[in-house]
Length: 281
Ligand SMILES: Cc1cc2nc3c(=O)[nH]c(=O)nc-3n(C[C@H](O)[C@H](O)[C@H](O)COP(=O)(O)OP(=O)(O)OC[C@H]3O[C@@H](n4cnc5c(N)ncnc54)[C@H](O)[C@@H]3O)c2cc1C
Picture 1 (cartoon, rainbow, N blue to C red):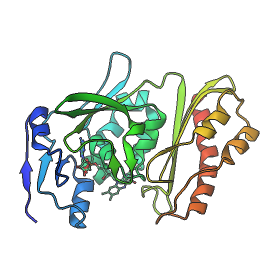
Picture 2: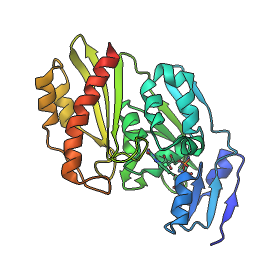
Picture 3: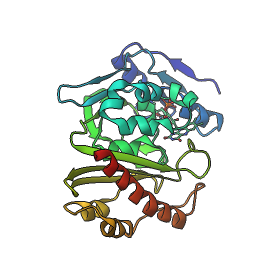
Picture 4: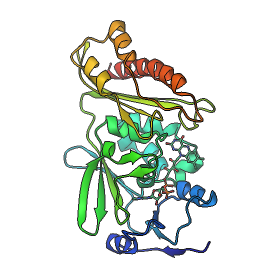
């Protein structure tokens, strides 16, 4: 099926090239997910709006010490960035086993977040870290937590005539964070489950906890009950037993049944908390 390719040179022009009422008009960033959907015939665009000439790539820190990553920055650039490695090492570590280097060279962080496949590795990590995205549309910009981006399987709260332009991640401060991905095939496969934790320790006790899992339901899931158990308590095996026995809502898929995933989460949650503890030392 033929389609039009628009290559706007400004954000305003790009937004004007989108269509609030027509889902067959789509932005394209790296194209790694979009092209697969087109090849599979699930997407037949009438127009693709390339974001390649908008100057949306780059990594820097903001006035509050936050990480600011332009939407068109490739996943590989983020993985290799000294700023990210020093200030947010969990993001660089997560990227090392996200797909393969060929995909990471091309895929962008904006496309990654907009795609909203619940198996993706970065959304749980960024949600656990309290990251936000800036979304631009004809009426201006809005900023929302990454956690509120996904609304269902491949569905987001981004309107058809809006674009993600920026990712912002607050400084880690005293927190330590870990992401563990369990794959059932190669290490860089899509996860059967992914567990992200961000913990703030005060001595041996946990002052603040953020726990978000991926690949368990149709969007990343915050384990609020687990967080409540962890906060204000001393980290020991009894606490981990208690945290790991919480009831979870999990759906099975090609990577494993719901029962199997629940068991994986119990095991990987303990491991991720231990890893965050080790990082904090
Ligand atoms: C072989 C393979 C293996 C993979 N394995 C993994 C894995 O292990 N873990 C993992 O997390 N991911 C994995 N992925 C998915 C990969 O992370 C995504 O394909 C990629 O991040 C999408 O980014 P992109 O820039 O290519 O997006 P595109 O393909 O360009 O776009 C994806 C979607 O987002 C929309 N979009 C793009 N940019 C924007 C924007 N700025 N604002 C609003 N909407 C936008 C597009 O219209 C489209 O709907 C894999 C992909 C492949 C091809």
